[in-house]
Amino acid sequence: MAQFLLALLILKSWLYVTTYRLYVEDRIDPSPQDGMIWQQFNIQDRRVVPQIFTEGSARLKFPVQFAYSSTLWITGTSAGRATYEIHLLENGSRRLLYRRQIEGQDPGRIALPPCNGILEISSRGSVVWSDLRIVHGWASAPYVVALGIAFLATFILLRKSKGHSLPDRGGQRRILLFIGASISGSFLLTFFLLEAAMQVFGAPAAIRTLRRDFGEVSPDPQWEDSSPYGSRLRRNQNTVLQWRGGGDIVRMGFIPPTAVSSSPNRYSLRTDAEGFRNVQVRAAIHVAALGDSFTDGLTLPVDQIWPSRLEQKLGLPVQNYGTAGFGPQQELRVLRDYAIPHHPRVVLLAFFAGNDIFDAERFDKYERSEGSITLPKTGWSIKKVVVRYETFYSFSLVRLALNTLRAKASNQEAGGTRVVDTAERNGESPGISAESVPGFDRGIFTVPVNGRTLRFALMPPYLQTLTFSETALEKRSGWQLTRKTILEMNRVSHESGAALVVLFIPFKSQVYFPLLERSFGKEDLERDFQFYFRQEPAGFDLKEMSQNRLAQNHLMRRLCEDEHILLIDPTDALQMEVEAGRNMYFPDDSHWNAAGHELAASAIAAFLNSHGLDQNKE
Image (cartoon, rainbow, N blue to C red; front, side, top):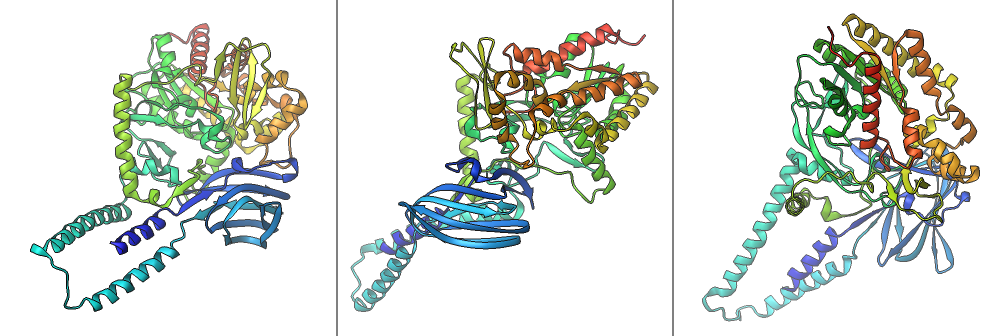
C-alpha cells in the first residue's frame, strides 16, 4: 500500500508540472526607462508562438513566487548582436543568475532557486523573445527515495517471512488484489489507447478547436484553402458560430483580456452552394455585395449585417459575396466567377481602408510565388498557465463533454440560444456623472460623450496607417494594384449591364480620432498612443496623423470622380453618431457593431434610391 501511494504521488508530481508564460501585460513597475517593449502572437510550424520584442536598452520585471526550484525557458533571437542579463531581486538583494551575448537564435534553460521576489530580464540591442516561460513542478526526488526504501523493506520482509505467510482464508487477499489491479489496469489501458489514437490519427474537430488555448493550430472546419483565393468559407454549411472572449483586438494580443468584459455570442452560420453567407444561391439578384469581413459580417448574426438589412430596405435580392481576409484581387475574381453569372443590377464593392491596400500587396506576392508562399496569418493570445495533465487529448475530451453539458443546461435555463448585443457589449454606459473625465487603461479609452460613457480600443496596425500621407499611400504598389482592380471591376460590371458602386469603409481610428483629439490633451494622447505604437520605435506625430486621417478617402474620391464611378462614403455619418455617444464599432474589435451595419445599410439604400438604382432593370 505504501508503494502504491508513493507511486501515485510521483505520478501526480509529474502530471502537475506547470508552465507559466511571461507576458508583457504581467510585468511590474513599467517605466519609460524600460525601453521599447511590445508583444504579439505569430504562427510558426502550426503553433502559436508568443513573442516579446525589445529594442535598445530594455528591462522586463516579473513577480516570481515558487516554493521549489524551477526552470526559466528562454529563447532569444537577434539579427545583430545583443546581450542580456537575468537577475533575481529578493529581500533587498540583487543576484545575477545569467549573462549572455547572443547573435542569431540562442535557446537557454536557466535554473531558478526557490524564490519570492522579482525576476528581471534586461537586454541591450534588438531581441525577440519566443515563448518566454517558467516551468515549475513538485519535487519528486523525496518520493522516489521513499519508494526505493519501501521496495527494499518489502524485499527484506519477504525474505524474513519466507515459509511463514499470513493466513488468507478463501484467497480473499488475492481476489481483492486481482480486482484492484483489473480496475486500475483497465482505466490506464483505456486512457492510453484513447490518447494514442488521438495522437496518431488526430482528434475530432471539436477537441482541436478547444485546444486553441494551448496554441495548437488546426484546420478550421468552417474554412478551406483554395489556390485561386487563399482561405475561404466552406460551401453548404449549417452550423453554429461562437465568439468567446474579446474581439480581434484582444485575440491578437494588442490589449489584455482583463481590460474588457465580453460575453460569449452564439448564432447560426449558413453558407450557400457557392461558399458565401447566404441561405441559398439565387438565379437573379439585384445587388452583388463584394468585400471582406465587414461584408460577410461574421461578428454578428446574419440578419443584423448590412447586406441583409439592405435587402430588407430595398425589398430586392441582395447576395452577399463577402469573405473575411479577401482583398481587391480576390474580390475581382469573385465578381467574375460568381456574381456576374447572376446578372446583378448593382455591383457594390466594399473597400476597407484599414487593410485593403496592404492586402493587395500581400496577395500580389502570393500570386507571383505561384503558391510557394502562403498568405501570412496572425495567432492569438494563448493560455498563460498550463498544467501538464491539461495537455493530454483525453483531458480535452473530458472538458468537451463537461462544456457540452453546461451549455445545454445554460440554454435550457435561458430558454434557448441567446444573442448578446446589449449596450454593455457595444461599450456604451448611460447615466454618467458630471465629474467623469476621459481615461485610458491598458489600451481601452473611456470617454464621456453626450450623457454616456463610450469605451473602445483601437487596432494598432490600422492606427499606424494614419502615419502615411496621401502622397505616400498613392506611391505604394498596393494602391496601384487596388486602382487597377477597381477599373477592371468597373469594366466587367458595365459589360454585364451593372453599375459599379464603391462603398468606402473607414477604419475605426479614422472615425474616433477627432473625438480623442477633443477629449484629451496633446501630451496625454501622445502617452496613450505610445501603448499602440510600441512596435514602432520611430514614433509618430499627432498633427501629421490628424492631417492624414482622410488620406484614403481623398484617394478613392479622386479615382471615382476621374473614372465616373459612384462612391458612398459614410465616414462623416459614422463620426456624427460616435460624437453623439453611440459606438458604431465593437469596443474591443475593429469591426462595426449592429448599429454600424444599420447605418451603412440606410446610407446605401438612400444612395441607390437617389440614383435610380433601387428598381429592377426594365
